[in-house]
Amino acid sequence: MFSKLEDVEKRYEEIEALLATPEVLASHTHVTRLSKERSDIAGVVETYRRFLKVSAEIADSKEMAQDSDAEVREMAREEIDVLSGELEALKERLMVLLIPKDPLDEKNIILEIRAGTGGEEAALFAAQLFRMYVRYAELRRWKVEIMSQHETGLGGCKEVIAMISGSRVYSRLKFESGVHRVQRVPETETQGRVHTSAVTVAVMPEADEVEVDMADRDLKIDVYRSSGPGGQSVNTTDSAVRITHLPTGLVVTIQDEKSQHKNKAKALKVLKARLYERQRAEQQAEISEKRKSMVGTGDRSERIRTYNFPQNRLTDHRISLTLYKLDQIFEGNIDSVIEPLNADMQAEAMKSTPGK
Image 1: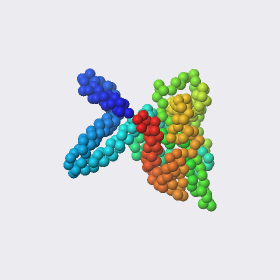
Image 2: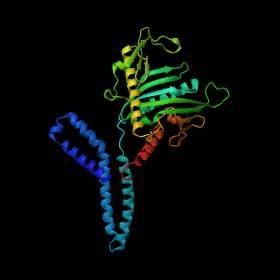
Image 3: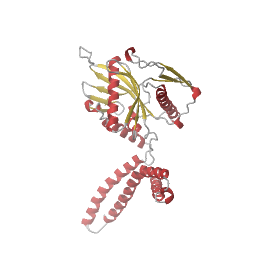
Image 4: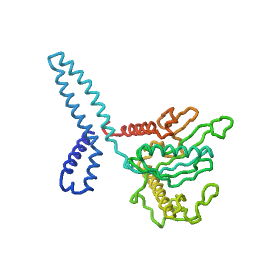
């Protein structure tokens, strides 16, 4: 671990020197790239330097602990106790900082929410879950763009696909994929019985052009007239777009826009994200069958969370987390769920960090 820390500190000093040279300062691209790299490792370097300073102070205190003066020896022992606690905390912090960062954490996401078992009640919960994520995005000043939405007549949502863009969106929402189960009494229930419904959530990083090889010959593009709920006509032109990726059979249909070109652009973006997610899943499976994401096996049919309305309770089954504040959570205050998930992931990663 320490040889790696020495390398990081050396690189930090190299960047500091480069940022002071006229050649680099004359290039906005170089300044931006190096400044970001410096920012990324600044926390590691600062913590490492504090670790070295505390280590040196402990060594000095140990020398003082051999002094002939009893009062000096007692003061040195007290100092060693305090500094040793800080040193251990700094070591733990360094191990967390050295965990390899997920290169996808900075990416925007494609969020897909679909009503599962439970009929209209599942659709109503899908709409409520989507509003929760929208409110969370608003709190973090992210942008939400609805790509496709299939609403029901009672205010529910059979399916919604949205793009969420902003700072480190994927890093915050990547563990939301899976089946979200709701337990509550539907408004239409006359006997007060609690019903259980399910909604599927998929979170996929936005794919860049270079990350997905999607040739035109592999695409089948169909256009047709859009139609809304209840048979209402959205427009009278062939603006709806359905794209089929022939090698995989993946199909994306978008009809929200009146423009065929806009629908096609959205459909292609969603299809790329799905292909990218599929490629990533295949690569991870090849690397190691034991490597599991925070959604367990990664299977989207797996139940990850239960929302129990009668008890105002949320339970995340992956980390045995239970919170009694559904009202706050559905206002977008979901960091109390996200933070423990991220912390658990870090703890798992630390087990395989060299030097532990």
